[in-house]
Length: 286
Image (cartoon, rainbow, N blue to C red; front, side, top):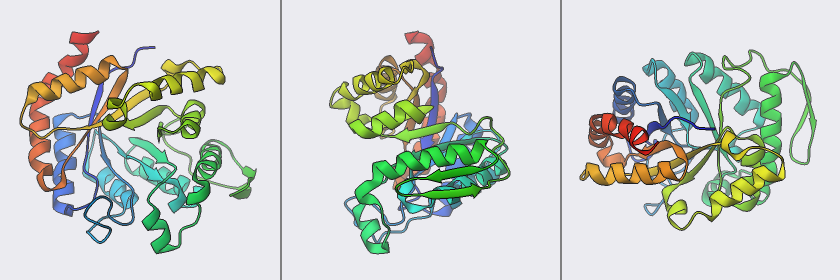
């Protein structure tokens, strides 16, 4: 199964401004990118520590929905432990309706220890099990009249979730994963698997792991689109095109360019200029 090559841009929502976010969203929409992204953290991550400015990821997606007309929108990726799955399902459906059916639903197990300890959020010690249960519950809430679920971590009793998503049967599910147990969840539940360029640059063992996990449950691995996040400094377009071509040859047809917040608008401008050349990568490599 061959999937078309798509390109997106991502401005996390950390170390940035609302003005910059809006400009990036508009650039993505006007330039014809396929998708535009933020991320989901409650405190800033990285070497600068947790006290830098950061905006909430799902509120930003609602704003994205209203600020754009064509580009698809998503969060790369939602931390499952931050919200009850019924709440997350409801928020996602709201964004799907606000956007006219343009939501890409990104989710992962969560990992940032400091957020969980600062805010008293439970579940990081059983994050994969919680993600597994949440995925089952969310899909049921999106597609069934009533949801009953008696799990280790979550319980639902005759749970109602209306309206249903605009997209049928539900918005595409993107799961961020690289570990053995989370890869198995990708094989079972994901429309799209997301990883980072740094992970793939270490070797392609994780790709083999996904293929094997799909085989174990009788799923064709080609049904799962592959997404990769990569960065570009805006200086050498040929390097960007080479990167894109390399990952495309490895099967990564959803390519998300991460924007360094201090230079986000400039980089988004340069990527918009490079987009026609990026569109030629698929034609050259097919």
